[in-house]
Image 1 (cartoon, helix red, strand yellow):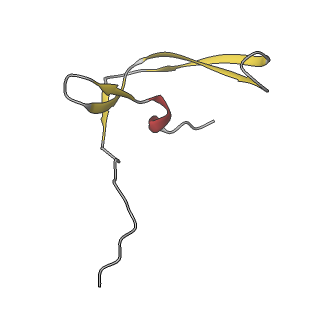
Image 2 (image 1 turned 45 degrees about the vertical axis):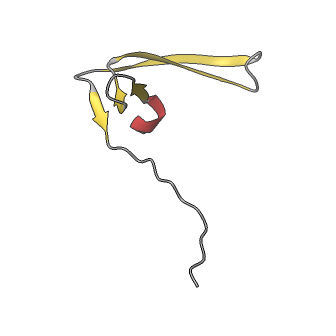
Length: 64
C-alpha cells in the first residue's frame, strides 16, 4: 500500500511549514468511528521531511 506524505502532514507552528515527522502511525478502518473492524500501524523512519506548500487561493473572476 502506498501512502502520500500529504496524508501524514502537520503544520509546524513556529515556521508555518508543512512537515511529516518520523514515528509510528495507526490506521483504523471501519464503517464508522464506532465500528472499527481493522487496525494496523506503520512506521515513518528517517529525518523530518518538509513538504512544499500546496496552498492555492483560487476564485472565479471576470475581466472586462
